[in-house]
Length: 400
Image: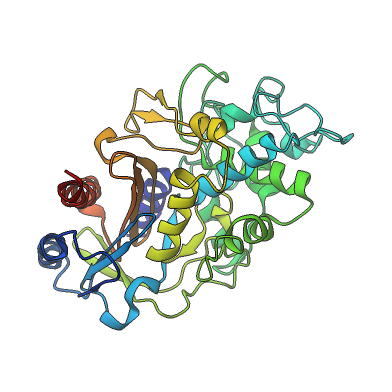
């Protein structure tokens, strides 16, 4: 069982009734029916546990929040773990620093920070990853640097270390306790120590959370701030995202209220999850947010263009083929399936989140679940894509 749970974490890291608030034209009843249907279907698979789905739709003039299976009183401020939607913040931070002339995303990571006599990454053994002098910042953003991912791939059993053959982050928790506070240096350092890499930079695509850890280091070195503080100062406060934060201490494991117990199904066993140490996911998967806040972020990033300039944003959302399950990926941006727009997915035990901006309907769509069905997680993701697809269709009817 323990091995299966660890495997689940690896898989996850690699990838309400409600109230309509302002918009009375979209057929909310139809969308409510979709959510109710999905929850009923999954409750049957999850031994009738209290599980839920939330959907938030945001445009310039109107917001809609619908949910099924979640407490009505929590509304759009219910907190959940948005996981890899964090990558959109890290990518936006790097691209903003690029716009400000403080870095160039086509620089090698061994180059000096602009207007500073120090390199983007420390010139130390802990950061001497394979091909370091060939990797660019852009390649870290679009997962084409070949950086070995310690959260998604077990350390090879050929290395001479007590964690050989194990997931490194799970090993550190086992040694140091569940409330251990991870740091970037140790997560990157194990890659450097053992010379681990997937391929020569620029030759393929491989999703790498550790690559995004390296981006987190770059942001901290340029800004002079801890990453969570940079996000708060640059993004959360200006956009009034009052209910979002990025846990940075291992002791910060419990979601604040309003929140619910989430459920993980694995090999027909149902596991309630209320605690999660996400410090190993800093810069790539540690966000705690709400439907309203995450929709606000997506709308201001992709539609209102209050985070990045037009040309930089276009670079962010322009994808290249990945020749694997992601299909197309930009700079911290997923573009598959194309018909539901672009943004990012996120998954952790036991949450699944899809965040998208759909240009044709000029709206952002956030759907999240408070359960994760490991026995059929790919189908669950497809089902949530279908929720967004149905929402897009209902919005489109009001625009025709």
